[in-house]
Length: 346
Image (cartoon, rainbow, N blue to C red):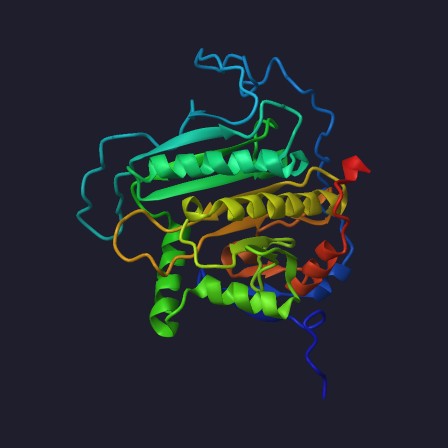
């Protein structure tokens, strides 16, 4: 009788956070690739670009001049998705054409005055300043908005229109779809098991080790068992923390260190400035008991085979179910094998 081999036999894995299934079909990596090939990311950027609207001292499109900042700099997005206090649509009179009001704010947050840096090339001390900025923004926006989303789109492949190191921070008066799914799943798990879902998960991954990439006293980085993207990672605290603004000084230093390791690992995988979308999920600021929530960060990179071949979420993924071409364990083995020094520093 044939014995199940996850690297050869298609199977499904369940994501308890989103209540979705993922098809794993690692045997597909053997197929030849004749599809689209991307252009590798540029690495020859200047320290200061006079045409960049995020660089220190430069003028933005609305006429505002940036200060001559060196570290972090936050400003209200000049072309925001969310607006503060817009009129609400009329109440629906049926169940087929339903809409709702949306109130919020969008901010741009620069990591450094240096145009040619990425988080992967910053030292842990510089990353710690970025974490301080995130915490300050969360503390401020949580006074007004139920949901505060810190996220970064890195690289043109992920839709980033400016290579200057930056992220976005949005505050809004409702829970977005992904946050609502995670809220419901974590609440249901807490009611059933009496402990937070992602605290239990981090403990089990730490004990198992098959999908663990980095781990220190306070944090763990894993390829999730249910990962969708080829080299997807999840960053988790090892104690129960509801949001980023609850971490201690020691935890902040260790977070900066493990983020540096994680991002260097990504760049070293294909020796390129690795594209990704990433962001932190923490408890909603809507009052009530939020003890089911556990802080975590998702990292979703599109690259699959090389710096020029990415994973496309199309066809069956859009119409049926997400499918991935290597197991989480294979991805973890590959990432763990990489050097810890950034390839540009060799």
